[in-house]
Every structure is written in structure tokens, then in C-alpha cells.
Image 1 (tube, rainbow, N blue to C red):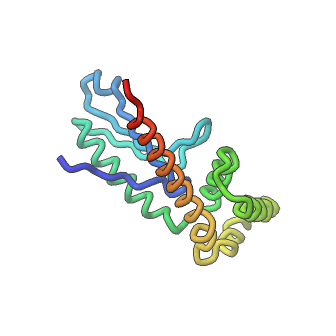
Image 2 (tube, helix red, strand yellow):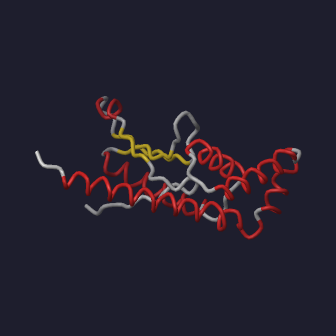
Length: 163
């Protein structure tokens, strides 16, 4: 059995969660797998589900769909995803001052635009995917690096403890 690597969420850069539906399996009708990135008390950024006879097959199909959809969304960030990303960063405080100001300006400009013209305005502001490349991607990379340093520090701390 080969291990399948899941891509990070294209919106927030976090690892997705894999959920195994035990009650569905207990019923004897097969297995159900859900892969999603869902911030606390918010709608999922991205969610895929798959049902098969065995959990491993359901997971493989869901993982393939997750990775395909994550790849499709990287580089084509919609305003809705940008809005969710900004709300997540505002909630967790994991962005710099300049990124916060820039995103606030973009959000204000988009909110002042009538709904029927928002797609046009977003395409204008996000020409050549500059918002993703210059704000979202570097911030997600900084968050990922900070999490790796924190995890390494925790592992070092655990290694130094004696029972």
C-alpha cells in the first residue's frame, strides 16, 4: 500500500482533516471518507467525499479528488476564497501588518463594488493572480515555516524530558 500525500488547503495553507464515518461502516454498507479543511465555526474551504466498499479505496478516491481540486484552485483564487482567507488570518493573527492593511483595502474596495460587478472588479485587482502570488502564498509559507519551527521545538522539549 502506497502512502498518499495530501496537498495543503489552497486557501489557508493548512493540512486537511481526514474523517472516517464509523457509523456508515458499522451498518455494513461500505466505507465513507471525507477530506476537508474547515476552520472553526466556518464553512469548509474545500471538501471532498467518497464512498466505497472499503475505507482504503474510499480514502484513495477522496485523496485523488482533493489533490486535483487543490491544484485547480491554486493560482485561481476567487474573491470568496480570498475573503475566507482574510477572515482566517484576522482571527488567528498570523499575517504581517502590511498584509493586513493591503487585504483590508482590497476587501473595502470589493465591498464597495456592486455585486453584479464584483467578478469584473476581482479580475482587475487580481490580474495575473498577483494577490495570491504576492500576499497569500508568501504568508501561507511563513505560517508553515513557523509551525515547523514550533513542532521541532516541541519535539526537542519532549526529547529532553526524562521519566
